Image (cartoon, rainbow, N blue to C red; front, side, top):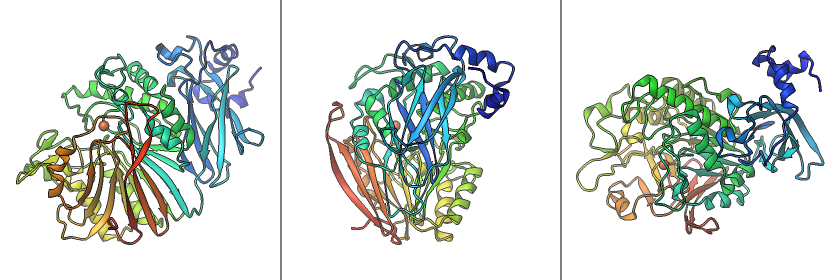
Length: 508
Ligand SMILES: [Fe+2]
């Protein structure tokens, strides 16, 4: 097949340099896969009323260098189809995109021209191979209800992804992942399952780590089940990093090169819109999607722009540096963007999907005070600015959805965090880990009772938060996995909470 210059430009390949494109495409015609190139599954994300992002990556041998793609596999054509039925009898949209080694043969297709609030099925074809079928759903214009799940912290070695198998059965409109999708550290052999790979530093390291994680068929099932929106935490790059500072104090230029590799691999493996493509060590990740007047979802990036930790790392007793006015969690630009969004929003429920625990928590037992320096209690001025904004502008019905600490928590956020005599302005649900090991219950019980705004804390269970939104109420279920060491584990509801619209805080 010959391509005209106009077709090449229309396909976006004109940007890749017209001089080299014809040669790339000629080679592409000959591609034949020795094994299934869709070994990492398919995904969709960032739904809008008429649009959604589709993702896949060609990797016939996912754990081999380059995913097992032939060395000369440049600009490999990947055809995509979106249908109104799972048998693909009524194709609504279709097209061709190209997978290149520069992006690990991943593709991100932004499909527009769809109808709002309806189910679609999609699949990819390349070199005669056909992907599994994914199911997705565009954002509704005027929904009466919305069902979503919140996930975080899925250390591969920690256990199986039965939580994701359960999500795939849940008939969800959206999955929100709030970070630690991978762990960058050297593989461990003392847990439920293992991978024998060194700590990630290079692009190849991170690509391999995503390939290991995404080879899991239960994770693939959750991606294929409904659209996701995602944000990262620290382990997508390096434990407890802050902006351009690593915990180990690496030279900044070296750490930023590592961050660039990590961000690129993240983009290559997530159903992210092209607007969120990384440029070197910089990547806009914060995003917003609306679901009619019922809900608006913000995914926040509390990692890339944050001030360095104050008073030490881990659990710290507060020193004066902790309270410095200029310390930020989101960075000035993202803070302003969120404020403007809050002010404009007419949605009933305002969901803040983000990395670390937002509510005030003194985690030292007894008279001592201890704050987790990596969470919002380690950034009190940044939290106060956001809470003051909510109070002063009467931002109604904010729900904060967080992860990080590998435990279920239900928290109330007071006008003055730490002062339970001030009004409650927001409610926070913290999801436990999908598989990462969590704290002992006794450890939580030693400090939780000293924090009246922490209404529930459960550490020894893995799982996710399932959230149902309706105009008058939000209903959260803390879904626990019976046995994380078993892929076929069942689930149980650990507890449930309700929030009534117009009445911030948990219903008793
Ligand atoms: Fe984690």
